[in-house]
Amino acid sequence: MAAIDQNKNTSNSYGMLGSLQATYHITKDLNISSLFGLSYRDKEQDRYFSGENESGQFNGSFILNGTSYPNYGRRLINNRHTNKWNWQTRALYNKQITENSAFDGIFGVELTEENVDLDYASGRGFVNPPNIINGVTDAVQDDDPSTTDDESTGNQTYSSDISNNSKVSLFSQLNYNYKKRYFILANFRRDQSSVFGDDTNVAYTGGAGVSWILSNENFLNTNNWVDLLKLKLSYGTTGNSRIGSYRSKGLYTIDDNGYNNLNIAYPSAAPNGELSWEKNKKFNAGLNFNFLNTVSVTLEYYYDDIKDLITSRNIPSETGYSSIQINAASMYNKGLELSTSFKWFQKENFKWTTSFNISTLQSEVTELKGLGSEFSTSEIALAQKVGYSTSTIWGGIKWAGIDPATGRDLLKKDGEIYDAVTYNSLFSSADWVPIGDYQPDATVVSTTPSPSTII
Image 1 (cartoon, helix red, strand yellow):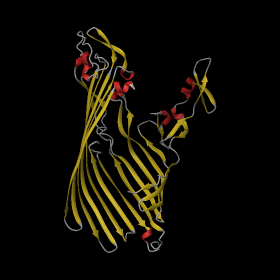
Image 2 (cartoon, helix red, strand yellow):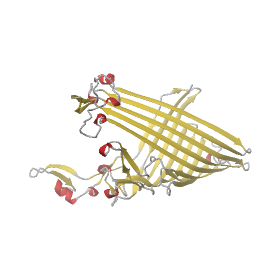
Image 3 (cartoon, helix red, strand yellow):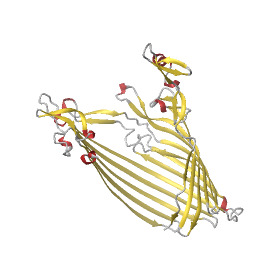
Image 4 (cartoon, helix red, strand yellow):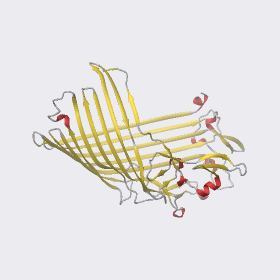
């Protein structure tokens, strides 16, 4: 409890959100609207760990004016400033073609920009009494006159990060329905993002879907117990650019404590002008069935074919870098989702409902680039391998004790005992086999809220 009183942890957040919209009706069927939105967020966090308790007590000491002080106390300050604006203009056309058929469409353009400014400061080791909350600039040491380095601020750290990203999009969608029974949808997008290289920053995506409301057919609309029966089918593509602002760019780190106390800059991230959008081809088939004004059932099958996933790969140190970001992996997800709800009782301002959900997920890695093999060993027990689930757990060896003659570990594989040196000479992580999967075959969620009063 003392640490709560001695330490300091404050966080202040500010925000502003606003929008302005204008709409002009050209005809009764056609209108144009424009929407401009702006958001600003400011978060400041200040943490101080006092030298009066273990959270602020560190090993070592420092000397100031001939007096030795323990390396106690730490101050951390983080400030994050984010501003984002969005401007969307679209034209909407809505036409009742005949008594039984209707058509509507939308075409628009969207511009988005986001700017993030991060500032960080920290100090450790203070000469003031431990019950004083010190500022970062109070973390000082002796400045050794025998060197050209400034040790007086050696316990202080300052850094800042500025990021910016923007996107330009064109989008369109067409909808048609006949007798409110048969529905057709088609859409198309062109997105251009600043986070990728000049030759790979554009993604073309789109899709189509159909649905059929059987409950509006003559052979079913006379059945009072059927409230809704709908079949739906869709296929389309999407793209992902939410990868950070500069993963395709060459980055440099600036250090103000370089050789001879000079400011220096050195490469910290390799550029890749060919880095491109992550792509997903999505297929979905579903059924909606509501009946007796009580039960609602939704059943869907989905298949996602995901390609060009972005990850890091090691490269030769002769390049000046240790790794590079590339489109290196592909996989798929597929499964079933079943959702049901039961409205047990509802009268006037009182209701009681129950919901039940069950879902399955099956995934498989279909491609891994840049490894020299089909096996990723970044986290060996949870490694990725082509042809296996992304949630596979790998193993296949067991510890069998210590060899009393050599002191080496003994390992058991396929019923045979090997000492560690022999095992490592014969086998590698590529010889591991699946021993489990942390993804369940199915996930079930059931909720029955207490009966409630509707106000």
